[in-house]
Length: 173
Image (cartoon, rainbow, N blue to C red; front, side, top):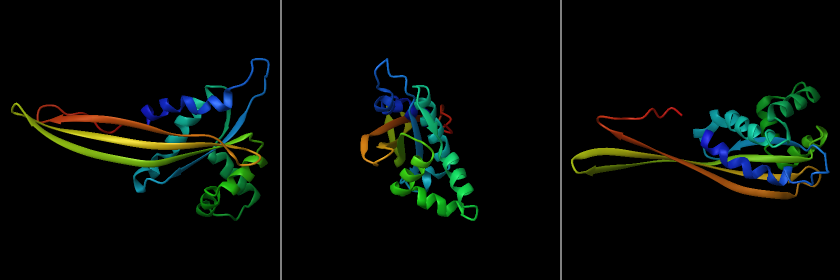
C-alpha cells in the first residue's frame, strides 16, 4: 500500500485548492471500506493511515473513522462495533456523522480490487516466475452538507516480483 498512497496526492487537490488569502482550514472525515473480498480486511487501517498522512501533509485536517466510531459509541453506549460499521458504510449515516463532528467534507476510500497473477517463463535455459500484484482503490470526496460528489478517481498500483531458483524477493510488503 505504500506505493498506492503516493497516488493519493491528487485526491487532496479539491480540498486544498484555495486562494492564498483564504486561511480557512478544511476538515474531512474519512471512511474506508473493502469491496475486494477477504484479501484486504486487515489492511484497511493501514490504507486509512496512508491516505490520512498524504492528505494531512497537504494542510487538511482529517477525522479518522476510529474517532467517528468512538463518537457514535459515546452517543450510543450499547451499540455494537459491527452494527456501527454497517451504519457507517451507508453514505447518509456517514455524512450525518461528519456534520456532527464539524467536517466540511467526507472522503470515502474503497479497496475495490486485488489481483495476483503469475507468469512462468522458460527462456534461454532460465526458468523464472513473474508474480504481479495489482491493487485498485477508489475514492470519493463528498460535500459535508449535501453529500454531493465533488471529486472521485481510481488509483491503481502494481508490483512485479521475479523469482528464479537462484534468486527470489521477499514478498511480505
